[in-house]
Image (cartoon, rainbow, N blue to C red):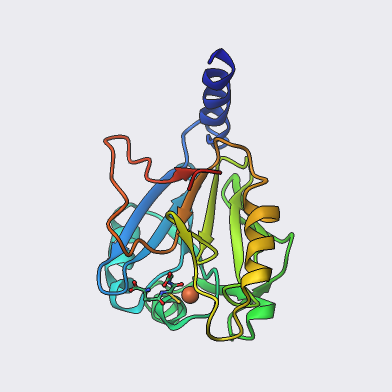
Length: 216
Ligand SMILES: N[C@@H](CCC(=O)N[C@@H](CSS)C(=O)NCC(=O)O)C(=O)O
Ligand SMILES: [Fe+2]
């Protein structure tokens, strides 16, 4: 018990940037495709990244980013499926200076291509790229540098995983990705998936909406 409390306290401390301010996190939802988009920002430098934007809600996201006084460096995609990648292009035009990012293995066009192990920096934070193929060959999971949160795209959903029956999906590959790249994260790492098709998520007062491994 005491150890768990210490672990949470340590995590809360390390989620702070250079000024000691906590990371800014907003979980947003697009109800037609049931997609989550995540905004992460450094409160000091005002640099931010957006994970898995959706075309229809890109104007909403751009408006929020402006209202929060953030500078969007990257619109980042966990994988190449139409429900995600279509938003990046619009965001580039709505927020000049923003660059689109996706894995090289996805085969999709972007300003920046990333690979397993690459880091995406914003302010005093960074997202580490973990290749997690299976839903698609180019799927990646983004892990905050202190391993307190992970953005799993369609690799790991809530009480399930992404489908593997189309666009070069492979159940065996996904099984290994989830077990070796996601379940190996610390037990108190919060998992933020790309979809909720069943209304399983809740928004508690403290806005912590992830679920913990390995009981996701
Ligand atoms: N089953 C979904 C239909 C939409 C869908 O196929 N979603 C993908 C992720 S977007 S590429 C998926 O992997 N779903 C998981 C699944 O178990 O189907 C729905 O219920 O609307
Ligand atoms: Fe997908």
